[in-house]
Image (cartoon, rainbow, N blue to C red; front, side, top):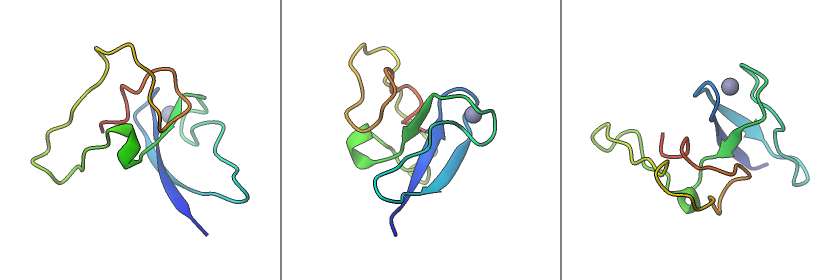
Length: 77
Ligand SMILES: [Zn+2]
């Protein structure tokens, strides 16, 4: 079963979600916000181990192709 890592754009909580039959989390388990973003390479995800530096796409108005959020500002974390 594929397990994907998601990031909450609301509270910054990262969590893993077991994807069953193409389902996906509708909300953050920590704050129950709906602004969750899947952490994938297609989302501009930068590893947390690479110098501790993250790249934010918040300045861009383009949507992330790897997540359902309108903004992918949280995906760089
Ligand atoms: Zn949250």
